[in-house]
Image 1 (cartoon, rainbow, N blue to C red):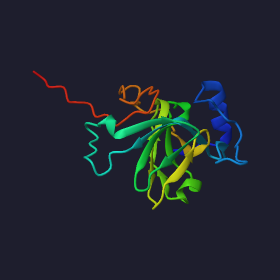
Image 2: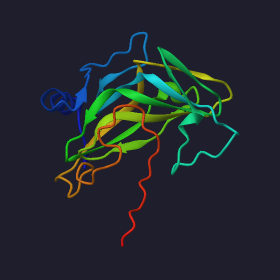
Image 3: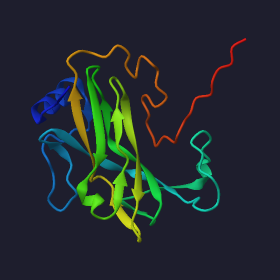
Image 4: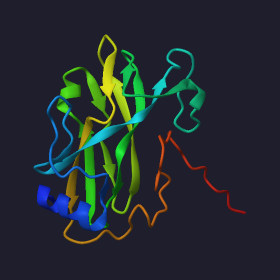
Length: 191
């Protein structure tokens, strides 16, 4: 596996609609940077957020998420409560080629404020808007800005295509449009 360059990312975004909307140059003046970087793409945070408000009230179970524990808001920014987290969605829609795996991690600007973005892969042939879990590890609320950079995606190219892609597996988060909560498929009982 090798890391893909800015030229490859730009070519794939233009030819294969790998990233939509696509920002071919890094934008940073007065904003948290986004767009193509040397070996990755800094994606933006969308305008819709779901703030976890159930702290201390109950258990948050990934096998049975109570979405009533989240407050949905939309706007130019969002405050992440101290010691809590927010779910957000990328502005960009991604279509990952069959011979590519990505790793997504948070930007250092937010990390320096105590904010961590979950590290997550985008598997070969996964597509959709990215649901991000954004945690505030600090002692005070932190403001997130919509339509500005939130995380960097690094593209890793394989020497050959994978045997089974995310699309082949009919992955549960394939083609997600909105913020997707944790989903665990129930086992099908055999007769």
